[in-house]
Amino acid sequence: MPNPTHIRSWYADTATPHPRHPPLEGTLSCDVCVVGGGYTGLMTALELAEQGYDVVLLEANRVGWGASGRNGGQIITGYNKSMATIERWVGAEDARRLWDLGEDAKTLLAERVEKHAIACDLTWGFVHAAVKPRHMDDVADMEREMRDRYGYGKVRALDRDAMRAVVRSDAYVGGLSDAGSGHLHPLNYALGLAAAAVRAGVRVFEDSRVTAIDTGDRPVATTAKGRVTARFLVLAGNAYLGGLAPRLSTMVMPVATYLIATEPLGEATAASLLPTNVAVSDMNFVLNYFRRSSDHRLLFGGGVSYSGLDAPGLRMTMRSKMLAVFPQLRDAAVEHFWGGHVAITMNRMPHVGRLTPTTCFAHGYSGHGVALAGMAGRVMAEGIRGTAERFDVFARMPHLPFPGGRRFRTPALVLAMLWFRLRDLL
Image (cartoon, rainbow, N blue to C red; front, side, top):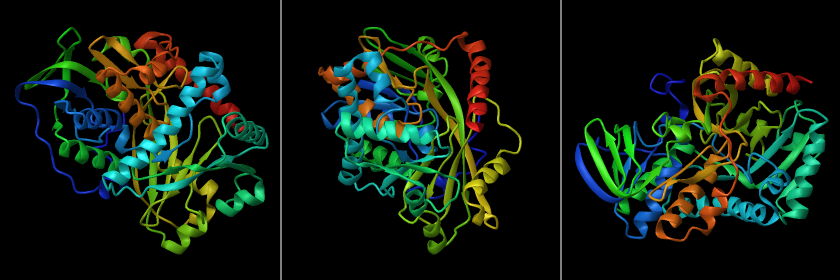
């Protein structure tokens, strides 16, 4: 597991100044106890506190320590699966509701950034990059589905020349431009949500790992030095929930992903790579993604690990992948390298639901969590307040545990990913 205390990220080096919250000591009671200080937990806490609920948030490390502070910062329309696939699973009506929730998720993010003046470099513009000619069939399908079936007019197919105008690389044969997706500084967004939550009255405790929970009529969360009793419990640990809720631990798989940041390239050089300042993700199954930073670096991510082990030489491997896209950066130094876990589900859709009438959860955003995690927080807050229609749309999505249990699921997934890696090479 990548250890962010040993790998200094560019996000951490450019984080907004923020207070250190104390660890929990002693016994507290509240309306809602939230476990996890990432987007999901912070948005749930903020939404409820604004409605007058007394909320305690417990974070095992520091706010934004998990995937919320270490992801690629990409805000992506829709879900990890196509809407046609989702329609087969849940029917046309719920698929439309899920599409609308995905669009609302982006709106919610933008509204929070504006309302709370969160300095997170929010920028709109995104491109799905086609690596192979067969990917252009996927581009056509995506554009047709989003534009024609769902009325989303912000996408545009790009041929090779149009693609090269927005990504100055010979690595791509075309792509799909999406003006409604974008990118931001993920840690600063999380820190901004945390500051807003504290202003709204949320009591935040860091270095307060929850070691046991009681999900009965009066839920309890226990830490090494304290205990919180609440009316409702929210589990928002995502890839870092561990074995706290055994039933949930089989439903998600922690997957490590990595990023590098070059030295500052200068505004002219950075703009020469990505003239319109879009975020980019290629269309391979095991994908790479990249974007410009506010201080004119290239941030380049990918290099996933499904085994729980960091492969040797990852920093150089990531640099080689970057140079395959932008060989003009061969003399640019890599100054930062970091990684962390995101959570995937078997069907690559968010897993939202209830363990008991007093305990709800959301996790497993499968690469789309920057926007969707915030919406999951909002619908959980709605459910706690007694309005569960949108919560139930997510909860009706069918989910299966990973086969093999916690012991054998990782080897099985590693073998499956080897097949997909080989397919990406064809």
